[in-house]
Length: 373
Image 1: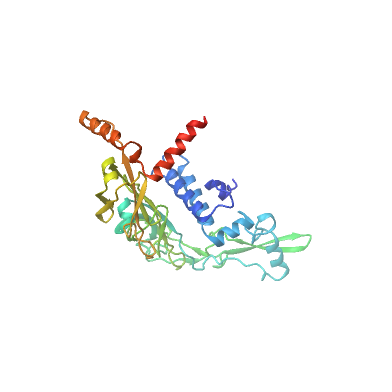
Image 2: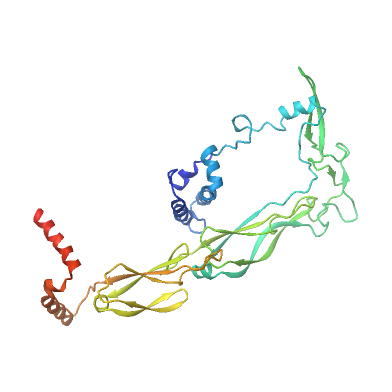
């Protein structure tokens, strides 16, 4: 099945800015994260969204994608790779004495596969970081045979069919003459090795499935959807090659009071009409403890105040975010008779004179709007 356009996956146009790409990814990754969304296709959609973001958020990868799309310009005609399948490589190999074809040595050292682990964090854990131990299933060298696959006391032998090369020559008579193709040896599956007496623990694979405990240091300021590479903690290497890496992908649970945007924290604080009109000093919760916030007299609803340095530490160490407090003036739904009487008295006393010039201009516009109807 062909891949969907990355812009379509994130619901964006090709002119989308970096901020728009980031916001779309955050929204969709939360919506389709497998820990939250239990639909059968949620994991596939989350993987598709993550892949699209990794390309479009990287300037170099995005430019490459905008020019070539999903097609690899290094491939042959129509994106098809003819190498090694009885095509040009084998023909050139036969014409030039077998020196033209470049094939991977099956016995060469190769890096092990990378692994991925999803870690769920609380809002506070993501902000301040932590050290924790995780347990992952992965393949490791068999302790019985030390990774050789052979029964202890026996040896691994070279394949007698390919003489340890892992490849066999197959000759064909064609209109061009005799063509010699090289194929992986089916007797040793291209390894060049034969195990006459297989290890009873791993069955000759040389590897067994184990659960590995790994210490992970979560950096302060990590955000939802970001990942951490733990070098060398993936699958073990092949033929003495280096181990792969472990990628820890973070899912951050939402907070009932705080919202996060980058390194900044946002929250809403209710105040009474009297506090907003007369001014007051209120206590505001932050991730770093309670702080005092002065509300000036005449504060209007939705006014925003900034608490410098009370946000989240930047994950790369570039300072600290701020906390933004949005004040909401709450209108009481239930009033006692005494309260109602006082408010009526206030209304009579203040009248239009209680409205300042800015508010007077606003109410004048409202009156004119009604007159025009």
